[in-house]
Image (cartoon, rainbow, N blue to C red; front, side, top):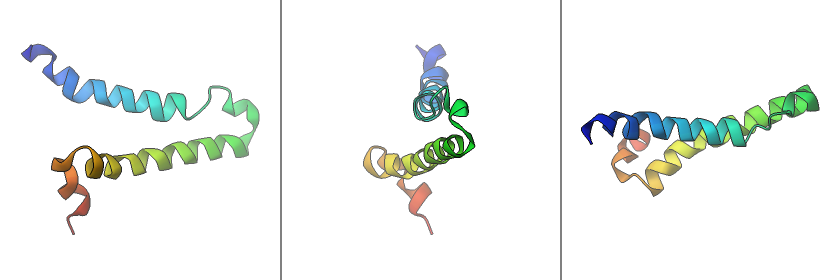
Length: 71
């Protein structure tokens, strides 16, 4: 059980985030759609990625709140 702890705490969440924010939100063929749509898809994915972390802390992971609200 201890051997898989690093995987479940660090690797697995990071892979899921990348899969969703890069794999799902940015279509595979977006480059074929032109430069404007490519930058729009990348920008929206990045914005969602950035907003997800404080939202995750506030809604799901209360122990992380000080990381985002400490002034």
